[in-house]
Length: 97
Figure 1 (cartoon, helix red, strand yellow):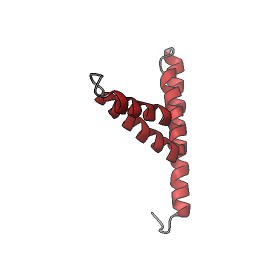
Figure 2 (figure 1 turned 120 degrees about the horizontal axis):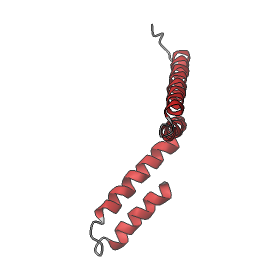
Figure 3 (figure 1 turned 90 degrees about the vertical axis):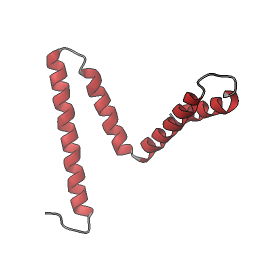
């Protein structure tokens, strides 16, 4: 993603006088670079995003399989949220009740 964003910014810089709508290359490049930095910094959310994307693709399958996929995705998400809450409670300096 980072490489793609940089290439879009370079395309804008080299050909903005010659292409109509070249501002979209710049916007796409900047957003792609920002998202790639966000993904690189937040690997925990990257794993969750991949899991949710897989569950989304599975939702296009027959009804019972999509229900099972959504249940698994929601269950996994709730487990992750529980782990994060426990870790936050263990490592925070205050006791939250």
